Length: 346
Image (cartoon, rainbow, N blue to C red; front, top):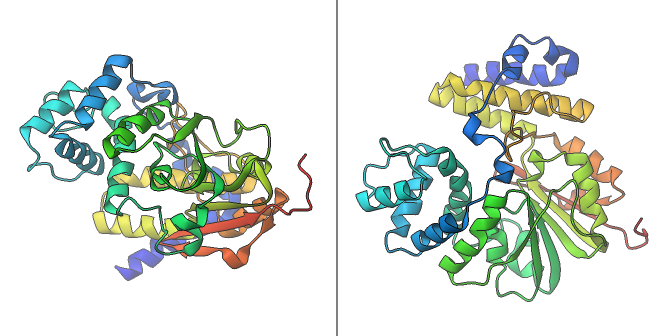
């Protein structure tokens, strides 16, 4: 097994180091460029629930069977057994249009709804705490007290939920309309005031002035056009403000891929992983992805640049890169940069 892991990881790593010329000639490239996604999942950025659907979801999330409903969607999304889920939860999920009528499988709408539900479920598992706050004091809840904080790519807002009740201003930006629709629904379920989450993208933040003490980005930058997004993050920081980005890099991602493929022996998933590696190479070298599936889905084409690329791009924004504050956290890296007080905003 170790020999297989070394062989597979070495092969992918050599492909990464060989650069763009090597990957364009790779026999899998043509096949990867023909990958399609289901038509009913096209343009999910624009997909919204109508008023009756929102009200039905609100009632469902406060229903006595709601715990089972959330567990059902969560497990189906992750491919886990659902044999012990109640028939009432199945019935409710089917009424909502989230689960197929004749089999225990998510519908196209169910797959999109599963994203905020999965994040909510993980948030509950970690005791409603911020990501990684128990591992790094810089990311602890108290570190944000009294500050103006912007989270980019915040999803439904689980991290903003964790900051509820804390003195300060906490704002999110999220391009997926459906995720934003789930914010008040889940806030009502939690009995808290829904945080402020604005429609917007990391590459064009809807704030004309530098007004934030902290800009936070948790595992979201890899879905953006990273370099212009970093410049936008730097732009909205106040002088003396801090940018905190937590996300994956290519090394840990390759380790995960190798262990997953050799452990599961499900080689069909190799296409998606290979596409991610190829997109990472082309983005790091050329500033663009090799291939993005039709429909511009929120998580369709992630890239995991090496740490040295992230450091260089952060430096290009004019921020002071704080490598002394970088940390490895559960296979991800926390990147930190600060806006010099002496630099005037342009």
